[in-house]
Amino acid sequence: MTGSSLQELDQNGAGSDSSKSVKSAITVSGVVKKFGKTTALDGLSMNIPTGSVYALLGRNGAGKSTLVQLLMAMMDRDSGTISVLGHDPAKEPEALKQRVGYIPDRLPMYDWMTVAEVLKFTSAFYERWSREEEIALVKRFGLNTTQKVSSLSRGYRALLALVIAMAHNPDIVLLDECTSGMDAIARREFERSVIEALQQSGRTVLFVGHQIDEMERICDHVGIIKDGKMLIEMPLDQLKDTVKLLRITGEDNLPTNAPGCRVIEVKRIGREQLVKVELSKAGVMPTLPPGLMIQETVNLSLEEIFVALLDIPQEAI
Image 1 (cartoon, rainbow, N blue to C red):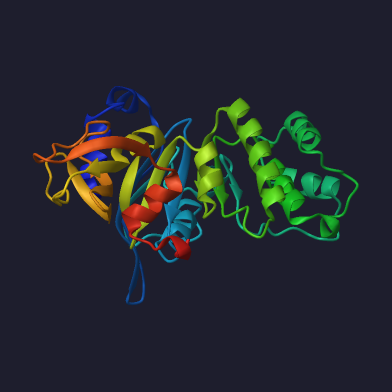
Image 2 (image 1 turned 180 degrees about the horizontal axis):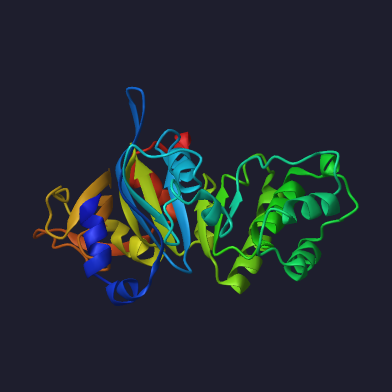
């Protein structure tokens, strides 16, 4: 039930009433992008509701970076449509950039400037820059405005980038691999700061990265890209109600075509089997053949769901 069938579940199953009433901040429909003979995006579609915190996941080479560059008007698509806050990035790049706060993996900054000089320099490029918001964010993140950028740690550079991304009052904040290179403590502090700032702002957030456990604590919607296509896209709670680990007893294995689910993985220990399944309807257990009984239903983390659906060895994550 991957791909379009899972997206149909999102539209027709639990939570569909609220999803229909929420305007989309970003919509991508049938987008194709090729680099020579390599297809980076292969008819990808995506919908990010306004006010959501959306985690975009995928393995290296899945197409995440290409999609981000299309959204930020760094390149144009070959076909398909993109709307960011009602703007086509390829046709209205400047209007778009005024309304989107972007934090890439490595935000270019002049190392010889102080924090205050960087903020003053950057503010001139944004019509909606708020000095009051800038001061409040600098205070919240504990930035020393007299300190030179060259002396900032990786974590504090990211926090400075977050001030730049939010001080011009954007409607969308796009975080692109911005915690890569940080140690665990810096990532956790940045995550805490992001959560506090974004929860109070009510902005739409697109979070692209590989730190899935941290993203799980922040996001409420998830999209997983595989081979340039959207494999799954739905609210996080619904995704967790859709992919489960079942502890089943009985002599026979659960059939791969059992009504109500798709069997992802089976591990058998004696008369007991641990089965990861993708349910046809969120929260509704499958129909088991006679002689098999569900003894326990186990919730999976977002990382475990990601690994299971993409069929990735755990040691490769």
